[in-house]
Length: 260
Image (tube, rainbow, N blue to C red; front, side, top):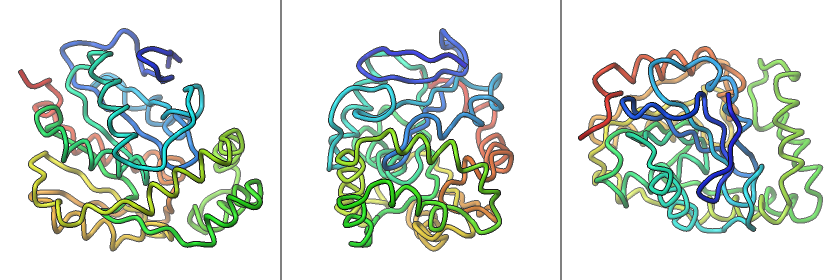
């Protein structure tokens, strides 16, 4: 796994340079997070596809102040992938990252023939108390992720790297992320999506419950839905093997060849 900074964003790559004959899974983290969320995917999914996990502006190693609108993040990601000439990009996003993935599929259909939506929804309403806690006591909000961000079955030790990472995100950036989620609503546009889509939900996810994933699968033509037991909102960390298996099953050899 290699840490790099190019085209304005920091990212980890499973291997570098990217293989131009393979498509590229592009992992996009959620609110207040970073590329650290996807370490277990980058460590285990190599060989079949290029792997890349980016930091959104203002997160991790990427400069900037972040945004409070999903379309603004989407434009940055689209420009980054274009400048970097990422072969056959397949956006795979969690929560806010899933909203960005949906926006990419809707606004740039010619560039993305496949997408993965993880613990996300077409509308992401945020409880007012979340915004209030971030504004008034960000460390307390991060600490509360143990209760609402993961399944009760998840070993707390697995969450500590994510909590430590979240504390490094400026509170104002995290606030903007959740505000962007709260403003996001593409329910009416879902039938426009022509891409091949995998939707993955955690059975114990309190922030984006499985019904969110079901809704996506029912309204995106041809989408496939997978629910993973004993997983909450931080599914890539809680159940990495199960998520990797779902990704591998979805991304067959034919879909992994970059379109020409």
